[in-house]
Image (cartoon, rainbow, N blue to C red):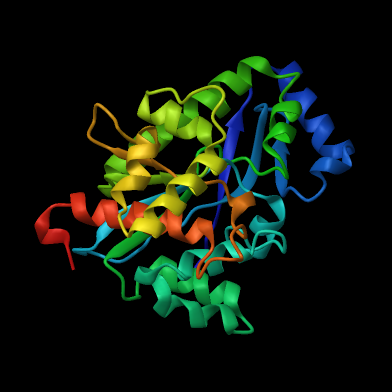
Length: 282
């Protein structure tokens, strides 16, 4: 099995902030499943996180990054994004997209986690897209609020290592890998990366569903984008950032041929395909 799991190290601003986080990791059961080690002399904590960067060489497929907020420690322990029981249906929804249906049989394997990890890492699958997976904030916690609470006593380190460094490393990652399209699954990311704020009152899941209903009824994807124009933003560096409904809504829409989450992904991927340079189309 190729390895999705990697190690990252946080350098703390001072001993006090290092001790604050280390003490919580040692004593608070909320953080019990996180895999980490500490170097007390250097004020560092090294932890396990996850990333899928295909190892394939030159490839004409369109590169798409699926960007999540931060990993779940149980999925990190299992060896694959969204492999903890409450999250596994994400993979069904992703592979029910027309472009990805040939990947569905992988989910029926007894060793589906290792099989899927190997497939995504090697890039050996038939699709017009080559998928990358990454979290904006790589430190794993069960909820993002748990991460904020973990670093409550280390504000300087949090600003530099979690907020600042994560954004810098994201920018370097997309440039290094030649990625021009990013699908994000949390509202803050499209605002942070795209630079255009969404309405403070908007319920993004409800807005996505309304747009999907209109598009399905009239057979016209453009109706989705007309209603949700801010869900697609282009950065000054010509990076296209798309907002998909969050993963908690992945099973909504049992009355439809496909779930809303899958339709949302299909509309985004069709838009990426339409706007990609012609040589990359398959």
